[in-house]
Image (tube, rainbow, N blue to C red; front, side, top):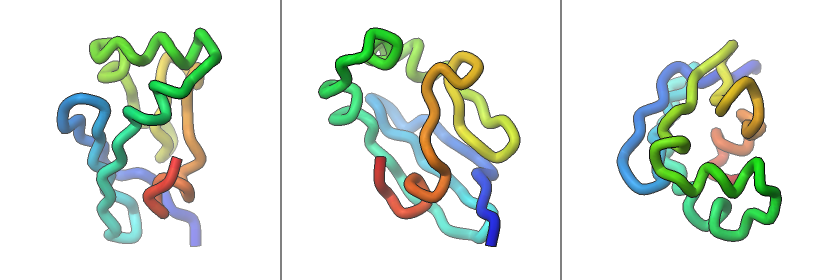
Length: 80
């Protein structure tokens, strides 16, 4: 089964609620991931305004033309 992100709603801080094409809904907190980031291209998303600038493209969540993205299945499983 191919799963895609149908909707992504920013909830505050670094949390995003995802609704997937198979009806599953998950809230992911990216805060710990961003705190531990060492890559400057990822660390810059600690800025909450930048973090909120994601888009859904082809069923995937991306920041700044795939500068930061995550495997859909990991998000579906509640992991990053």
